[in-house]
Structure formats: C-alpha cells, structure tokens
Image (tube, rainbow, N blue to C red; front, side, top):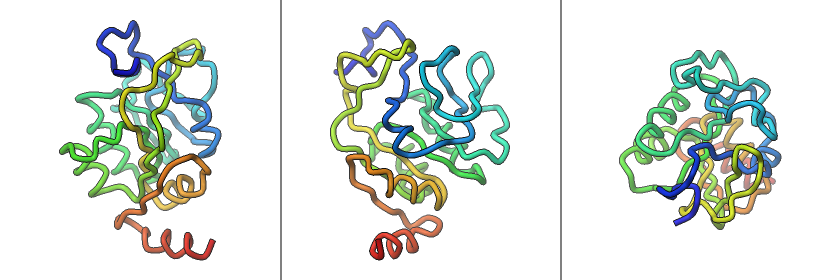
Length: 176
C-alpha cells in the first residue's frame, strides 16, 4: 500500500504532483487547496481550510480538483459535474464503484487514465517515497477540459465520453 492511502501515514495533506498541473494548464480555482504556504500553485485562486470549498461558491471559474479521497470524493465530483464552467478532477481510477459510475461514467466528458502510479507530495513539496498505492485518472467536465486532457502529453490513455460534445473530441482527435 502506498503512502497516499496508507493508514499509517502521518498526514492527510497530499499535494498534486506539479507535472500534472504544468501539463494541463492554468486553472482559475482550486477549492480544496493545500494550506498556505504551498510550494506551487494549482490555480490562480485557492480555497483552503477552514473555509469549506465544497460549500463555497465556485463562481464561473475553471476548476482544478484534487478532492479529499474517501467517502466525500463523490460529493466533490457531483459538484464539479454540475459546475457550469467545468474543470478537471484527480481521483483514483476505481471504475467499478457506485460513485465513479454515477459521477464519472454518467457525467464526465472524458477521462485520462494515467499510466503508472503517481507519487504525491507532502505539504512542504517533497515527493512521497512510495507511490499512491492505486491507479489514478484525470476526469474532465466540459469540452475545454476534455481537450486539455487529451492534448496534455501526459503518459496515459484518454477516453472521450458520450457526455457533452465528445463526438467533436473524437473528430478533432482524428484530424490532429
């Protein structure tokens, strides 16, 4: 079991690997950002505890979401799926769970299944010694987000979904 989900871990704060953000681009909002000071930004605006990012207004911002993993993950994905401006979420690729079926397979515009397992980073920016312990994926909500994942250059397999403009993603991909 990797350090990201280990019950023996000494922290619940795990940062998104910076190479993911660098590859995808700039986001307007991270509603569950790591506490300040953070070693790298994930968005132009950050919401961090004690403010409840799930209850906060996300305005019309394009969202980066690395939600708390566990029982709350589906609630965060549901809010992102309903968010008009869309965004990208980083979650475990637990494709058979009820939450994944409901919030990803039935609502997302695309999924980038990352090859290999991620190494998250500690709050000070140091890379975890162990990998995350499970496969991860990036989930796109909105056409722009799906295109950003498809064109990111990240090592993975992009799957366009039937929700919102995915036919144009397939056609654009074939032309590229």
